Length: 166
Image (spheres, rainbow, N blue to C red):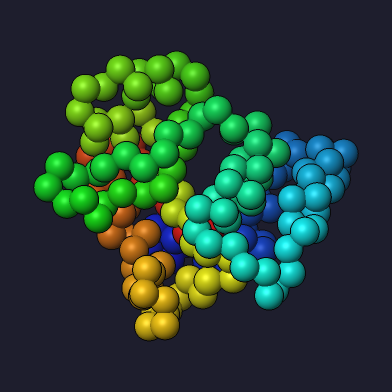
C-alpha cells in the first residue's frame, strides 16, 4: 500500500494473498467476471458518462455484484465546517451498522459505522492528475480522496481508513 491508497502491485499480485481472495471459488470468480463484463459492455473509451452517471451505471452495479447494494449511504458531510468534505458513498459492513448510522443525529457521526468511502469520477477521468479543462472537477482525484480520508478518519474515530476514487 502507498499511504492509504492501493498500489497497482497490490491490485495485481498482493490481493491474491488476502483471505477473501484465497477463499474465493473459481465458479464465484467466473460469475463475478461475467457480471463485470455485462456492466462494462455498453461503454467504450470514448463514452461520455458524467460523475453521477458513472456512479449509477457502473459503481452501484459493481457493488451489487459484490452483494453490497443496500449497504451504502450517499454524500454524508464529514466535517461540520467544510462542505467540500463530502465523499460520494460510505460503505457499511452490514444492515445493523446501516441502521445505527441512520439513527445518528449528526451526519458526520455516521462514519463511525462505516468501513470505507468511495468517490465517483466521470468515465475515463485520470485519477492521478488535475484537469484544468474540467470546470466542475479541475483538481486531482487522488488528492481529493486523501483529503476525504483525513476528515473521515477523524469523524469515524479511525473506523474508516480506506477510500477509493473511481
